Amino acid sequence: MHLLIRGGTVVDEKGLNEADVLIIGGKVTEVGRRLVAPQGVEILDASGKFVLPGIIDAHTHFGMKSRNGIITADDFYRGSASAACGGVTTVIDYAEPLPGQSLKEAAKQRRLEAESSIAVDFSLHVVIPDLDGDRASELEALLHYGISSYKVFTTYEGLQIKDRDLRRLLQLARELNTLVTVHAEDDQVLQDARHRLIQQARVSPGYHAASRPAEAEGRAVESMIRLADETGVLIYFVHISTGAGCRAIGRARAAGQRVLGETCPHYLLLTEELYQRPDAQKYIMCPPLRKAEDNWMLWESLQSGVLQVVATDHCAYTWDQKRSARTCFETPPGIPGSETLLPLLYSEGVARGRLTLPQLVALLSANPARIFGLYPRKGGLAPGSDGDAVILDPRKEVVLSAKNLHSAAGYTPFEGWRVQGYPETTILRGKIVYHRGYFTGIQGGGRFVAAGLGSSF
Ligand code: URP
Ligand code: ZN
Ligand code: ZN
Image (cartoon, rainbow, N blue to C red; front, side, top):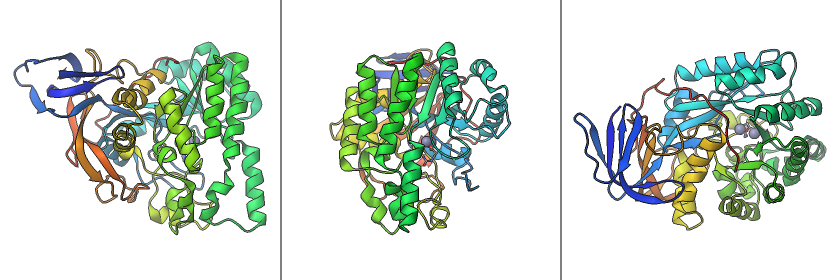
């Protein structure tokens, strides 16, 4: 597709630049002042607006079946359309092998499923619950296929990787220069908390935070860092929620270890008091919401570079799906988030002076593109990169409400939040996929982006 974005302020991770962006055949061909649109090229006026590279949500679960068999409300189409309405042009979702299934087969299947309906571009992480069968020898083939990041869990029955397999995986990833991402909650701490709460008959949704104490994250992050240090492998912690997690990552980085981390808007902006509400289930995700001091530590960690990515862990269930469970242990964990990622981070980050605009671009686009091997095709607006952009109107004020959002969850944990600045147009490879409140993309319009080797910083 051909498009000239005219008169905006282009933002990258280094700074701001008054420039036009010319996209021909889906690729950026020129960025500069007063560019001339070749014949037949559509012109989009961006004066007074910011032009950012398309947002990358590096952590989504579209069309995911939970352990108790419940399927998320947002499938690949609905989830990605909603993401596009928030400025997201690429998501990184997960392929999870069934017991006995090869990793490559799981990846192929998941890719096919996504390609048939997804509306933005996508890449995949592969979940590695064990290295049974030929799984260890498949990692190289996966890399050639375009998958260079794995996900391991330190908890969850059926997903938690055993110590022996974990050590082997870290060694293999070190040899291949691939990335191990980690869901870090210490299983023993969780089991103890669960046992105690059940004995005390404290199992309502209001006990969710108590059932997954902050200590679980601190301990798991520390022990994973120690293990990774033995091989020097690059590791990345997903959804860091606590000050303890940040401090452990900060210490390892200061000592020169290659450790990266991600947090999510809900851990930056919401706190565990929400579990006292009658609709507590709407705020149940794993790990749970924490305290105000954790929020502060997470913002500080984004500012100082201890954490490099903000992603959403989008895993949307409807209120009906959520409330069908009576206890904190049975409520399907996860919340919608992709569509509100940029609006919240711009408003609460940039407009409030916690982040600069280039920092915002780094956290939501350039850094995930580099870390997950998608750069420079994604993550920037330079000649040769994909023509993915979001035009953000810094003056537009919006009150977030499920009524105006596009996720099938039908609710947002940020209902009623007033945000300053909002995406006006989202562009995927030169095609407008969202404009002023409306999704204009197409089902199946997204493409698989093969990841190369990522980089650490
Ligand atoms: O509650 C969450 N986060 N659900 C999605 C799965 C995960 O652990 O990331
Ligand atoms: Zn997780
Ligand atoms: Zn997740």
